Length: 298
Length: 131
Picture (tube, chains in turn cyan, orange):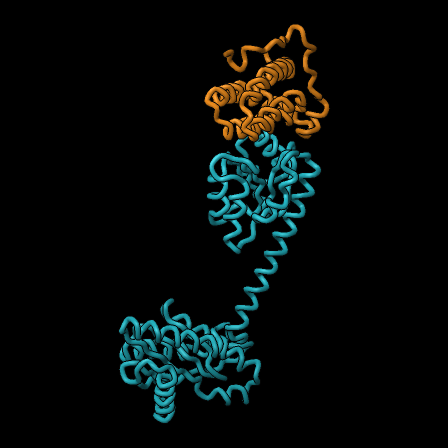
């Protein structure tokens, strides 16, 4: 574990450093509170710190206070105290310290404190990972890994607000897989799922990083193109269409041809209302289907 | 008025040498004699500087900084189990905190003397390592 030591007194600092290195830790040793704070707030800074209470510049308590203003990642903070500061421990806890060590540090006591600290950090990391996984699940489609309907519509609302503010155009594409029902009927739902996943990946691969794509319905995908005119959207739509039909989808020896019909709509004709924009794209998609599928229509 | 250190009546010649608790110190550094030597060398360099700083702060009448300087010195002294020196430094720290500078000036010679004893004891720790 990477551990920060902050102590302006060089003998104690060197003793602590030597002890921690012997225990197998990576140590960053600094001699005042300002250096400690800079190291702790740096990206990838130490997650565990042993801070002397009294230091020049900002003291250990101030370092605790300022580190606690950043909610994540959690940093476990141990304050070094002398015997006559023990009565002030509650004040230390109030500023955000997690634990205390009395000078001079006993190696066994130090190990006990560090073990607690490592446990708290590990628990917090698990919690953050679980939160991130839940956040991802809440806004992604489990099958394709793309944004789900709620999330792509949220992104559309957000981008429309920005487009209105910046007086910039915005277009959307609504893409529907051709004959998807037949794929499911002929090959089964597992193969249908595979086709959906593959098509989603192909569509994503030809978009700009600033474009957004989500699974809008069963076999429908909504693509949001910020700053794109309807002509630009048609060009992107053509790239998407070509990517989907470029080669059949293969699955365990099966070769399944895939194509998509795409409707394009732009704020130039509908204004900045999200419902009107999606409705216009849906109407264009309907025309694309009616005209024989595997095409882009605005 | 005499300077804070000039009234020292204690001398190394008339006082028993300080015996550092070597076994305890070695246990504290996990048996690493090299680390103990490093700490002793740091202390030998730092202690005179710390004492000089405390003397200047007493002369300047700066109680808050006196408290901090003495506190810092205590931190190094307790590493070596130098209890008498640590007690003397704690007295100066406490008197600095309370703003009792005349008493701190009276306490200073004892601190200076205990530091001398410690430095002599550290010399004995370092002696076998020197050529």
